[in-house]
Image 1 (cartoon, helix red, strand yellow):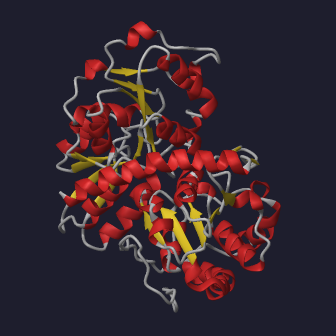
Image 2 (image 1 turned 60 degrees about the vertical axis):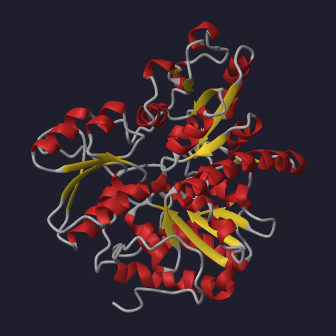
Image 3 (image 1 turned 180 degrees about the horizontal axis):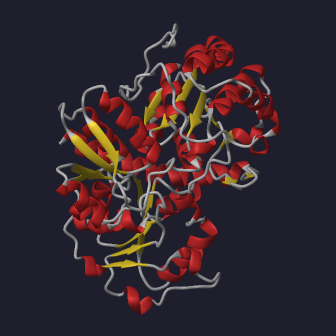
Length: 445
C-alpha cells in the first residue's frame, strides 16, 4: 500500500504520537451508522462510504484521500485535526495518518492555544471536548465537530438545569467550591469559575482536589462520583466525609438535598457515572491477577476496582504504560473498548498481550465496541466535514461555541447570544486556567 502517511508541511505543538501503526487491514469494530443518522449535508459521503466493498485501508484510504487531501492542501497549517483515544480504531488511526493528533482530554483542551496558526480545528470526539477547546480558543479560531450528536452519557447526567437548583440549595447553607470534571458542559465549567473553583481531568484530579482542600471550603465534585471518590481515597481523605448525592436520573425536578446530611461533608459528589467504566468489578481484577496478569484501570471505575488493581490513571497513563511495557508483559485493562482494541493490536507488535478486563473466558460481561456515543464519529463524517469546510458549505450546527446545548438525538443546537456567550466563556476559562496553572506547577516541581 502506498501513501500510508500524509504529512502536513509544518511541525506543530502537538501531543506525542500514539505510536499507532496503520495495518494492512483495518478492522471496524462497529457497524456503519444507518443512513438516516447522518445530517443531510453528510448523506452523500455516507452513501459513497457504505457502497465501498470493504473498510480496509486499501479501499478506504483512496476514497478519503479524494476529500481530505484537497482540504489539507487548501488550509495548510491553518487546519488542525484532533481525536480522542476512545474513538474507534478507524478514526484514531486515520486522524494521525493525515497529520492530526490523538490525545486525552487534557492535552486536547490545550491544542487551540498551543497552535495559534490553526484557524480551523476539527475534532472527532464528543461534544464537551470540542466545546472545551472552543472556550480556550482565540477569536480567530473556529472549532468544528464531525458529528454534533456525539455526546457523553456522563455529561447527560449533569445538565445545568439539573445541577443548578441543587447547587443553589446547598449554597443557601454552605460555602461551596465547585470542581467540574472535563466531562461536563461549558455551562458547568462556568459554574466552577463563578465559585472560584476549577476544572479537572482524570490525569490531574488529585492535584485539583488537593488545591481545593487548601482553600478551606466545602467541595462539590461534578459529575462523576467514582472519580471523585477515587481521588479522595488517593489523597488519603476520610471517606466518611465524602458524601454522594443520589443517582440524578431518579431525582424529581424539585429535589433538594437535606442540608443537615451535608454538615460533615468535606466533599460532595454528584451522583453521575460512566456506563463504560461501571461494568468492572473487583472480582474481575482478582481473576486476571490470579492468572498472572497485571491489571490497570481508569479511575472512573468503582473504588473497589481501583483499590484492587495494580495501577490506575487517565487514558494517557494507560496508553503509555502499555506502550512502554516490556516484551512478554500481560496486561488486563479496564477502560473503553475501542482503546483496548487499539492497544491490543499495537502491543502485539512488541510481544505484549492486552485483554479487556471484562472479557473473562466463560463469564458474562464483554468489552463490546466501547463508547457508543464516541462511535458516532466515523470516516464519512471526517471526510464530509473537511470537504464541506473547504467548499465553504459546512453546516453551522457542526460549529462548536461556548455554552452550546446540543440535543444528542437530533443534533439540534441552542446557542447563547453574544453577550451571554462572552460571559460564560470568561467564567469557564477561569476554571480551566486554574486547572492548567495547578497542573503546570506540579510538572515544574
